[in-house]
Image (cartoon, rainbow, N blue to C red):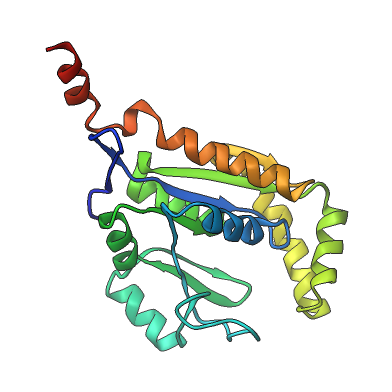
Length: 216
């Protein structure tokens, strides 16, 4: 993976942030991701590849890269993914080439992935990864939100609720955890986390040279 170096307005460089949002389906991470992208021009979305069918209103290359199973297996065999997993009977994966390109262009990268993907990404990129897990206020509220979307069958909703408990069990593998009982408040907290992580001393790769220039 390319070294994720970004420029800083003070003249020195910093390492880019690979910013992960995870939650059970329906807990609001995708809404928060869209708001974060709209509010922050320095952040770009990692678009996953998937074998699931395209839903109404989705666009290939924008929401997902929609591929068939054979193509996905070829991509796995050719080591084209940073991470990939089976979710609800379909395959999802993060192509590494676009991520490297975004980092090379000075953008931080946002990932909307599950705990398996977050774990794999952290194994590959280590300290460049910041992991945020978003809880629903309750499982009852989560089910109400899933039903309110009116996009899934009863069977799919039951599967999502069953998987939610398994996903929540991995909360302690994340750097930050938030409860999304108010969408705007949760969004503001996510923004604060991203800004703080960008300012970490360990990411300021050009800081030593800058400090030396102050003491000459």
